[in-house]
Image 1: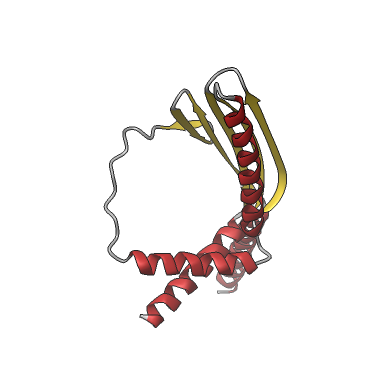
Image 2 (image 1 turned 135 degrees about the vertical axis):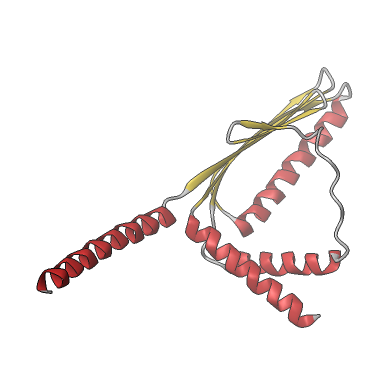
Amino acid sequence: MAIIEDMLLIGGQIMFIKCLIIFSFLIILALIPIPLKISLEVKDKKVHIKLFNKSINLHNQRKQNLHKNIKSNKIKYINLLSRYKSSNFKSNISIDTYIEHGSNDASLTAISYGTLNSFFYILYSLLQNIFKIKHYNLKIVPNFNKTILHLKIRCIIYINMAQVINILFMYRKSIKEVKAKE
């Protein structure tokens, strides 16, 4: 009888150690950031999107049905965005943007150059509400001799499992608030 009790005690200790190792692994995994690499390129009226260096074909996708409750969906996402904006638990982001644009008209190219600069710095301030920006590089090259648009955006979002769980909790809470108002 004592031998069986000793075996159960040893088995329980081994099980506790296994659970402790798995729990430690999950805690470490939750804190390690995972980079999401997104690349967008527009050249010669063709759009190429890459996610983790895998191309996404936009031309063969079927049109999705629109939801009937567009208003409640907007409220959910606005509520979620306002919660995330005030959160200190934001993801890091690095962005590299290269734009070569031009037209045969030099004045139009110059005006569009200023407009693009303004747009991307407004976009920068909007991104600051959602992410912690680690690196932001913007290069706009005007070409006064030919009509061209070449846009290249490379983006890396660093997110860990704890942030994903936090976002899911905020999303769930915003859904409950919208349902309570309806």
